[in-house]
Image (cartoon, rainbow, N blue to C red; front, side, top):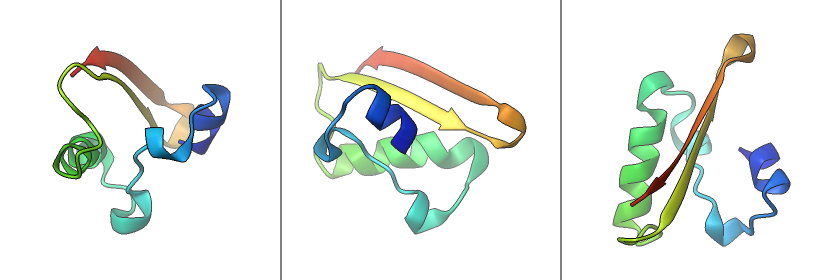
Length: 67
């Protein structure tokens, strides 16, 4: 997550990361983070949201969506 943040030149207030709270929750990581970010008011209707996830074995995935 920090690598993506640096490459996209995003400030800390533009990034939501909860790995330190839960650890790796595999397929639930992004849905949990989205829910928490929404509840915290960090995502609003109309926002452009970039999702990025990294797994072991050099797997990764990303998506860009309009919330």
